[in-house]
Amino acid sequence: MGVPWLGHTCGVCSYCRHDRENLCDAPEFTGYTRDGGYATAVVADARFAFPLGEVGDDVSLAPLLCAGLIGWRSLVMSGESEKLGLYGFGAAAHIIAQVARRQGRSVYAFTRQGDVTTQDFAKKVGAVWAGGSDDSPPEPLDAAIIFAPVGNLVPAAL
Image 1 (cartoon, rainbow, N blue to C red):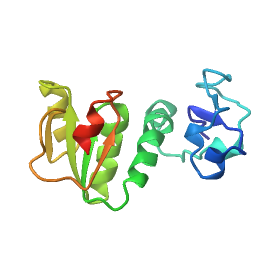
Image 2 (image 1 turned 120 degrees about the vertical axis):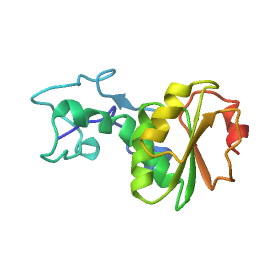
Image 3 (image 1 turned 90 degrees about the horizontal axis):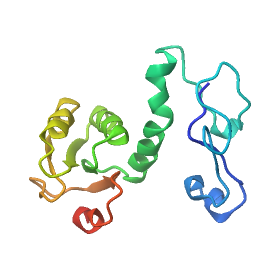
């Protein structure tokens, strides 16, 4: 079993009642406000525990419990978008780029200006285009997910 970063919420606030637990005002975080991390035994809220399966080791599966969940929730919220922009190509974006490609979507990766290394990596994991966050994609996007903590990306993505 795996227990992700968000390890518990109140379950009664408006956010929790509307499947937006990540915005709960009384959250508990694994490895921060509650004990956690790599362990052979743990007590966990079943609502926030996931079977990991038998394929892969703990080290290779662990990213799915943080970056993978953050990205998955965002990807689901993007709907059936065929052309998906990912702003901030870090841990969550590189996982979700691969999932989106597997779903048949076209991925457009936006990085810091001039970050050719990350742009090349984005293309390696399936992006059809990669450029700086100030660049325009070669065609209009259907949806965008912003992983970078940069407020001025919101109008750019819109």
